Image (cartoon, rainbow, N blue to C red; front, side, top):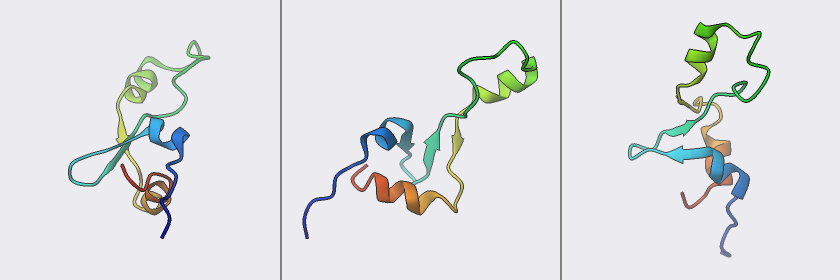
Length: 65
């Protein structure tokens, strides 16, 4: 079977933990921040894990990470 190419865009956005979970940054934190509440912006700072329904798709994009 031939080698699979890693999707480079996905590789930059996702990090795999030692236990196999996939971390990613939250969206909506880059611009137009004036109208967003302090609480909302504070919560957007934290990394979160990919939902279990999407794990298979991300693993397909990053087969060797």
